Length: 442
Ligand SMILES: Cc1ncc(COP(=O)(O)O)c(C=O)c1O
Image (cartoon, rainbow, N blue to C red; front, side, top):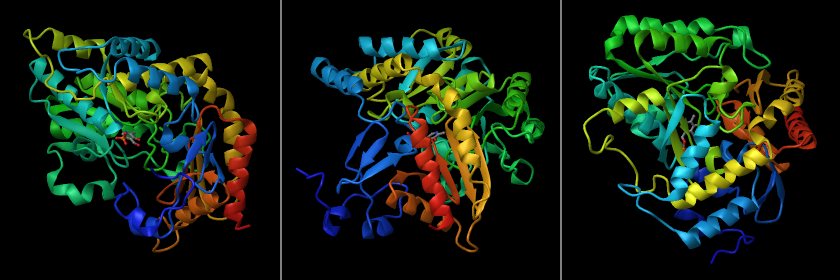
C-alpha cells in the first residue's frame, strides 16, 4: 500500500510514464497531489493548493463531492458492470434522458464513450456513417481547424491542429482532412473582454474549402466553440453563426467539441446555447462526471439519429466500447448532474464572469503580458515568449504559482485558467494576486 504522505523515491517514480509530461524533468523534481476537497488540493507534505483549473477542466462541482462518492459506492455494490452490447441497464437510460433535458434543442440522442478522445472519434465516425446511410457515401472529407485540440485518437489528431501532436504520426493521419484557419488575431483582438470583435469572416474560409473540394466530398466540420488546449481562443462575434450557415448551405454536419466548454464553463450548460448556435453533434467528457470516473458522450441531433433508424433491421452502427455507459460512470454522472442542478452550477459562471473578467484584465500592464482573454469562467493569459525558448516563460509562472499554492495550467506561453464553478470571489482574488506577484517577480 502506498502512503499518501510519504515522498516517493526516484526508483518508485520510474515505472509510470506520464502523459503529455516532460518525464525526466518531472521525475527530477516531482509535483504530487495526494488529497482534494472543494476548491483545494493538498500535496503529500500537506501543502494546500487552490485549484484554478478544475483539475484539467473537469472538476466543475469542486473536489470530493460526497453525493458522487456515495452514488459510485452504492452502484458498485448493486451492479458493478453490465455489457453494453445488446444489453442495457437502467442508469444508462436515466443518464441519457437527463443529458437530453439540458442539451440544446433537437440534440436528443446520446452515445456513450469513456473519454473526450473517444467522443471525438465516435462523432467523426457517426458523421461519415450518416452520409453513407443517406446515400451520400462520397462525403468522407473532415474539416478541423488550426490550433484545434480534439484528443489523441487518430481521428482527433487528424482534425486537430496542434503541430507537436500531429508531426510524429504525420504519415498515419486520416486521409482527406483539411483545416480552417484559427481565429487568433492578437493584432486586432488583444485584451478583448468576452467574444472578440474581429474575425467572423474567417468562417468564410469554409466556403473556399467547399469550392476547392466540392460539397459532395465533405462530411463534417469539427471545432471547439472556445479552443481550450491551444491557449483559450474565444470565437469572434458571429463566427460560429457563419459556420452554421455555410454548413447548412452545403449539407455539411457541424460538430462542436464541447469537452471543455460543456457543463457550465461558459455560463450556459453548453457553449452551443451560450453562443446561440446549434450544431448537429456535440462531443462531451470531463465535467460529465465531475472528473471522478472516466466517461464521455456524444449528443446527436434527432435528424442524424433518425437516418440510422430508417436503415435495414439489425445493428445500426458497428461501433461501441466495452465500457460504453459503464454503470459506475453513469452513477457518477447522474449524481454530478444532480449537483449541477441543485447548486445552479450550469449557469453560475454567468454571475461570476464580470468579477472574473475585471480581476483578469487588471493583469494587463504587468511585465510580459501581451494578451488577456476571457469568457465565462475561462481565462487565457498570454505572455511574451523568451526568444528561442517558447513556453519557458509560462512554465516558470506555472511552477512559481504552484510553489505559492495555486494550480494553473500552462500551454505554450499561455496560462489557461478554468476553476471549479463553485469558486468564491475571495478565491478569484487569491488566484489573480498570486499570478500578479509571480509576474512582478516578487
Ligand atoms: C476539446 C477537447 N476535445 C477532446 C479532448 C480529449 O479528451 P480526453 O483527454 O478525455 O481524451 C480534450 C481534452 O482536453 C479537449 O479539450
